[in-house]
Amino acid sequence: THFGRQLGKLMVSYGPCQFPTLWFCVKRHCEIEAFVPVPFWRLRARIAVDGVPVDFELATGEINDPATAVVVEERLKSASPTARVEAVRSWRTHMSRPLPLNTVAMLKMASEE
Image (tube, rainbow, N blue to C red; front, top):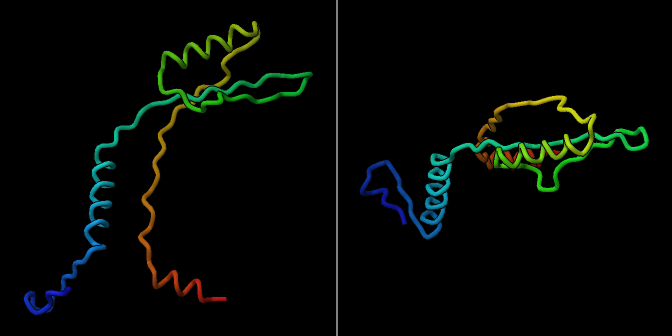
């Protein structure tokens, strides 16, 4: 339904699809605003097996608890007297927002050969 006459030249539309979509947008915005980055650790081990270096990682991937990360590191060191930490890296990752969907450009690209 349109309220064009009541608003002059402005046109406002509403319908059953806009409200749920707006809810998803507001919910996602609130999640983004409330996000707090959490540090995590990844441990990797390189072990020579018959002279061939083999890389190992934790099956769980990331460790979110610093005490657990230290325990796992100590276990790796105690497994071999020659084990040593070769590198410690720290970085922050930032992902840019995706570009808005431009359906006209998308249709033009899809129709091109």
